[in-house]
Image (cartoon, rainbow over all chains, first blue to last red; front, side):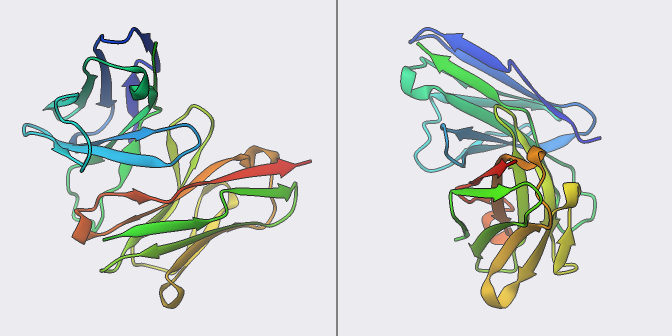
Length: 119
Length: 114
C-alpha cells in the first residue's frame, strides 16, 4: 500500500515551453501533497505544499507563477513548469500524505521522481 | 526553525563492515525524525522513523537508529554492509511547529567496497 506515482519519469523540452508533471496517490487519498526539487548531488528542497481544493503554499524564493500547482482531487496533484529554461532542469519529486488517522504523525510517501531537462 | 546536519557527504565502507551515518538535528519542539534511502534516479524510500515511541528504532534492510535527545542526534547504523547498500541516505526532521513539513539534511553517499 501507499504507492505514489509520477508521470512522466523523464521529459526533455525546449526552452520557453511548459511542462506538466503529474503526481498520483494510487491506493490512498492524499489531502496534502508536497513538491520538491533536487539538483544533482544535492538534497531535496521543498518547493510547495498543496492541499486538495485550495491554493498551494509556496516556500520562500519559489516563483508561484512559474511553478503552477493544482491539487484538484484527493489522488492527483500537478506541477506545471511554465516557460521552462535550462536552469529549471532538475529532478522533481512529489510526496503525498494521507488523511488523518488519529496518529500523531502522518507519513509522507514519495513518488519516483521526474527528471526534467530543458534544452 | 528546524534543521538537519549530516556529517560527511561521502562514506566509504568495506563489505561486511559497520555502516555509521551521522545526523544531528535542531528543533524547537519534540521532533519526528526519519532516514530515507535514494538509489540513482529514484525517489525516496523510508528506512525508519522516530515518532516519540522507543528511542532505538529498527528499520528495513537491517538498519537501525537511536534517538538521543541530549545529543540532538539520530545516527543510522547497520552492523554489516552489503553491496546493495550503496546509495544516498537522507536524514530528515519534521515537527508540528513547521506544519509537519520535512526538512532534509544534505545527504550522505555510501560507497561499499568489495
